[in-house]
Length: 515
Image (tube, rainbow, N blue to C red; front, side):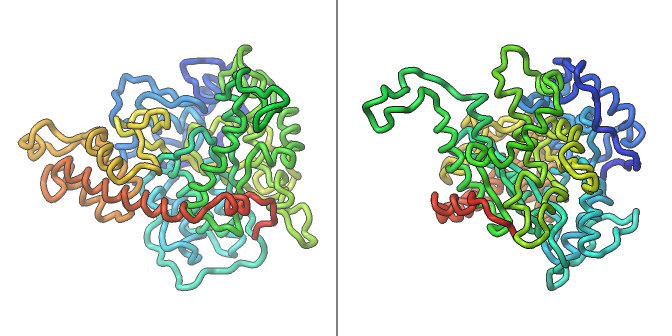
């Protein structure tokens, strides 16, 4: 399905957020942004939601009810999610069929990947900021013209050989992970699987930030009984906090991330606790450019928040600027400083957008005047991966039965899907055969949208389950197919992860020039 048509004039990123303290909106700039963005978005985005299949709608609220208040902030996601309204409130733009065609033109048509990723084909990544500018840069790099305005994705056949443009790629990717638990779940994999595909598709460098500092600032603990006495024990000078716990989680999570299939020579994975010194000049510039009122307005901090919370957004913003990586994105030859002009693309769930809207407001102060995007990072947003109990909000590590973890056994996976996956099937066989399942709320079908690669098979399952007729007429049959898919994904992931020890992780985290 396609999004609504868009115009050519962008929504301004510079919106005064100092007055935007409304708890009702709780998403970014609040009322000030909503009023500014909606007025402009209504000229570009149709007032009614674009037509979608039942399968596409299944990500747009699912098991929630219409009267549940939608809350989407950088720290909380709850209620029935209306992604059309999020686009309006956040001031982003929908990914249109023509934009997907442009992406196809600089990826599939260049021989880097066989087809667009299923997350793009199924509108799981649905919103963006400045993707058209990223396409322009890649079209220039390859020396190709953009497709005609009316063209849509789906008909390009990949050539037998990959195109090799001259010169370095004009963009880089940036993503990250806050290491809060040793075991990652399938929802955590979504942005990494897509970023790995983007890296192969664009043949570009990638930086992956591990925000162990953030997790300590928000979740760290202090216990005086844990502090050392200065003379005895294995670490007599230890403090009573658990900062080291989050540093250790970085190493554990890094193994899962590396197992997602990134290109080693083009990837730098770093811990903030280790690497922050290189980024510090840019962090200081961001601190200078952003007021406390702006940060509080965007993130809802108040006088009771520790100062680290207000300071951290600058740390997450700094990797948006290539100059934060002089010995990673830079060059060993005479092209010194070229990293400062690289454009950055950030794939992320849409709840992370507030960090980067703030970044985009001040980006021009951190780059040369000829930066192709004026310093602003481009973004591509995903919908939330729904929990097993129903598609409101997003999956959480804190509820073991809401998620499939990458450490779950095949028996765990089967039990969780059969027992906990919310069903859109009817109460009796007779009703199911008469009415079919409600695909909008069926979690098993929604998860298949994320993880089943075969479009034809997915369409068949949706058709048969939605009508109550055929091989997949019942909830049990759909859940059984999902179990097969998930067991294969987790098994293959664990196989790749088994070859990643601490030594391998350190290699990926070594500061070096990327190819």
